[in-house]
Image (cartoon, rainbow, N blue to C red; front, side, top):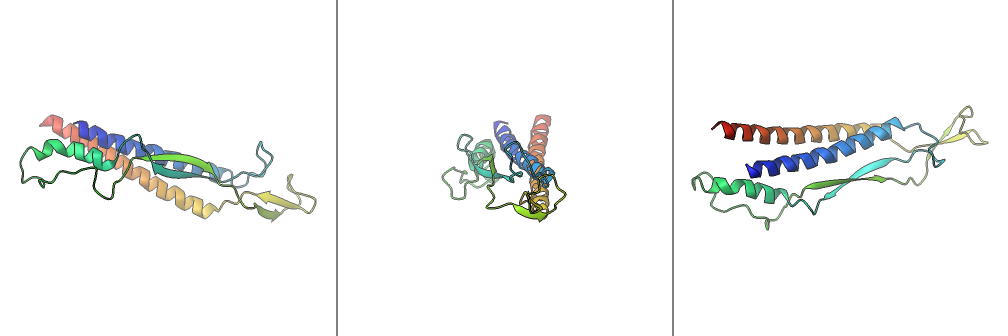
Length: 164
């Protein structure tokens, strides 16, 4: 059972990271036409950077812990070679950090009627591509759904194990 909780923790870390990305993309989309922030500049696009979470361990460690009890049941069920954390291709737990993308320059739009227009009628707009933001939104949504499936499957396995 302990191994299943580790898998749930892994799925929860993924859910948290994808939720942060979804919120950041939604904020970018909501501010696509924001020309004045409290700093006095147009809105600056944000993005989420995923990195390895050193505190949590790796997926291989969590999976190895969950397979230990299974390796004792019958040697034909699994290979005799246990999963170890020294294998290549570790998949670490994920941490997500929101960062502001400093634009080289803002988009310049000619709109003399805009309240933030300069003396030439040009307005500095955020350099946000709505299409790429929507693609990020869809991919993050799919990754969120995949993490929900991981947690749901682990929960179902735990429930089925209790029924045995």
